[in-house]
Image (cartoon, rainbow, N blue to C red; front, side, top):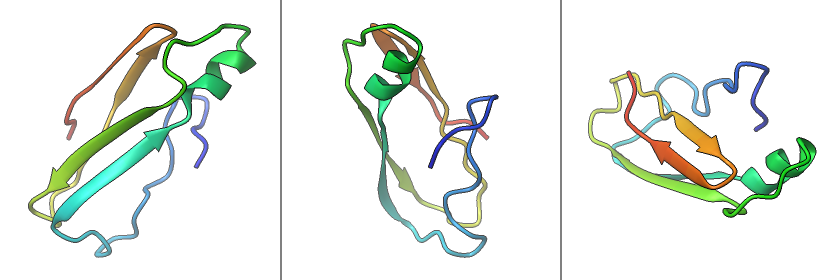
Length: 75
C-alpha cells in the first residue's frame, strides 16, 4: 500500500479477517526519502507484532527520519 498525505493507509485487513497471530509490516523507506531528495540509512523498516485479541482495533504508527525510526502500539 501507499500512504496518503497524512501518512496513513486504508486498513490492511477487512473487518473479521485478522487472526490471533504474529504479523510483519515492511515499510519501503528508501524510496520515500529518495523522492524527497534525501538519502536514508535504513532502506526499509520491518515492524513485527502479535495480535492477541483480533476483535481489538490496532494502529501501528511508524515515525521516521532519514537516520532513525520508532514505532509503538497505538489504539
